[in-house]
Length: 325
Image (cartoon, rainbow, N blue to C red; front, side, top):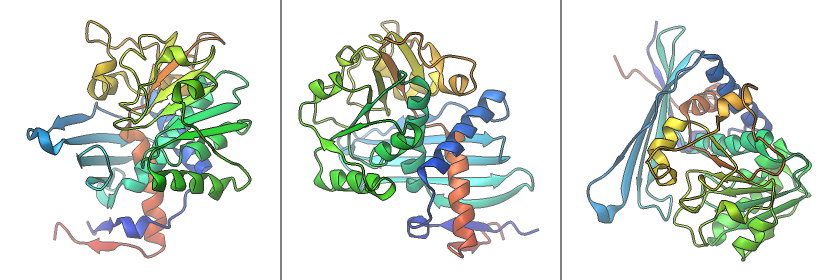
C-alpha cells in the first residue's frame, strides 16, 4: 500500500470553494465529536523566540478528529505582528483507518475559514435572543470572512459594521460579504467605544490595535464580546463579564494569559464544546454581558483541511510525493 503524501500549496487551494454554511457545520461537528469524547485535542504549544526585535513566535498543535478518524499536526511561525507577510502555517493529515499519510498543505485557507466559523458558532449559541447588530474590529486574515459567517449563522442580523485601518483589508472584508450576500452593506465606523455600545455582537480580531482596547463594560446589556485571541481587548475584559466562555480553558491559559485573574488562573463559566453539545448554556441571563475567548483548536482545523484537501485532490491539484520511499 502506497505511503504517498499529497502536497498542496496555497495556489492549489486558492479557488477550492467551501461555503460559510459548510464550514460552520464542519466546525460545529468538530466541537460535538470532542464533547462526546471521540476526539483528542491537547493544549497547543507556544514558543516566543529569543531575539526580541524580530517579534517572532511559533505554535504547534496535535489532535485527532474522531468523526473523520484523521490525525492532524499543525505548525505556525510568525515574525512581526503588524502584517501577514511573514506568517507561515501548515497542517499534516494522517488517516487512522489505513495508517497512511494523506496530505501536507498550506493552512492559511483553513484558518481563514475555521476562525470565522468558530466566531459564528459562538454567536449562534451565546448572542442574546433577537440580536440585530454586529461589529467587526480588524481586517486581517483571521477577520475578513467574519461578517458573512455571522450572517450565515444569524440571518436576522440587520446592521453590520466594520472598523479597520488597512485599505486592502477593508476592501477584502467588503468583497467577502458581497460574495455571499451581494445585497448587504457594511457600515464603516471610526468611534469604536460608541459603536461597541450600540452592538449586540462585537468581534475583536485586531493585532496591535489601532483603536482603544475594548472593555466589556462598553457593551449594551445582553451584549456579546468575542476576542479572537486579540490584543485589542482590555486585559480586564474577561473578569468584567457577567458570563465567560472559552473554546478551551487550557488554551486560554496559553494564548490569553493577560486575561487571567489576579491569581493567574482564568475563571470560565463554560467551554464552547459543552455549549454546542447542550451541556452548558451560552449565557446565564438575557442581560448578561458575555465575554468569549476564541482560540483555535485543531479539532476544527482537521475537518476543514480534510474537506479542502479532498476537493483539491479530486480536482487534480497538488503533487504526490513518496516521502518515505
